[in-house]
Image 1 (tube, rainbow, N blue to C red):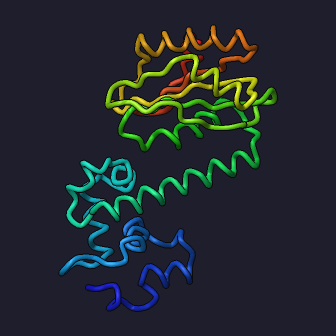
Image 2: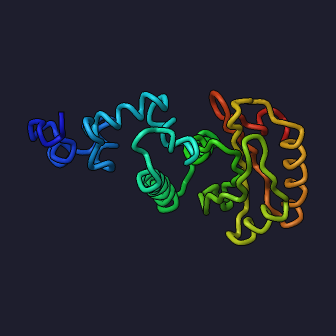
Length: 224
């Protein structure tokens, strides 16, 4: 059934305007971006098909273009629109944190990092930069890597700390493989960065790894 054949109250656009975006299912939200389906299939049904083939919304938005283009009907233009919408959402949430920057503690920092890094299917190295009151100054992505590694140097991290005049830094990276244990290279960059930051009187507070399950704190493991 085409969307135009649905009762007006069940069409995604009208439903959003009447009841708010939270009233829409994942497939209905995706259909708003698709606008049209394919021959013999509505935008909503096409969205449902993508979600089923990608193991849900998170899986769909985490696909890179090489994998995404295997989904029938998902071309370059639609892929770019979805990625743009995802990035807009991330930036809005980060902007809200900057405007109301007091982080309540390690859990809120880990939540911020998890939200930023969880969707990535390749390794990403980032840092959270804080002032002396642990208020958020910035979240910066510092390096993009491959499926199993990302290269970073303490110099890049020190430059970010100086740029934002940070008093404290939390390092962060993801393990798309799902492995939770810090690697020997994770421990090495943590030690070297701690030493480098100490020279400019900046504290390294933690190094968070995003993998399967809850975020891993290297500080809690005694590795910071």
